Amino acid sequence: MGFLKKLFGGTAAVQQLPTGTITVDRNGHIVASTVSTGFPKNLLQTIGHDVLELLREARAAQMPLAEVSLHFGSLRITARELRGGAIIFLFPQTALLPTPQSLNSSRP
Image 1 (cartoon, rainbow, N blue to C red):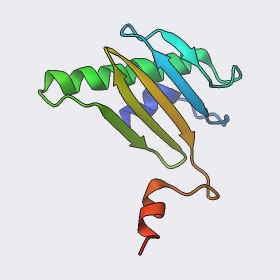
Image 2 (image 1 turned 120 degrees about the horizontal axis):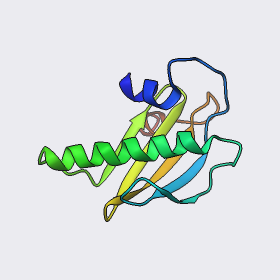
Image 3 (image 1 turned 180 degrees about the vertical axis):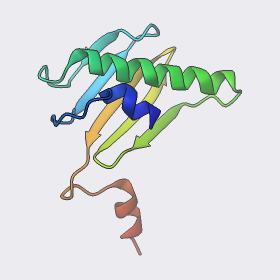
């Protein structure tokens, strides 16, 4: 829950979920983004910073991660490490879009 509180703060507000990809350098600065400019840039920077922190903490704990995937009720965040930086994929989940688990469970 701490991750969600960091992303969205203490106040609840309805807003559109981000869709697209952001690339951040090792300092957490956004290098490239395909996310709509209507989504707050500071929130994207927070997501990038927190993903980098997660990857660094895993490395410090002798559990380096090449990829991390976070699934929330309506948002999926997948990140891959890129030489200290990261590429982060943001996917909103809706009832009409299948999740990876539902695709795997539908196979015989």
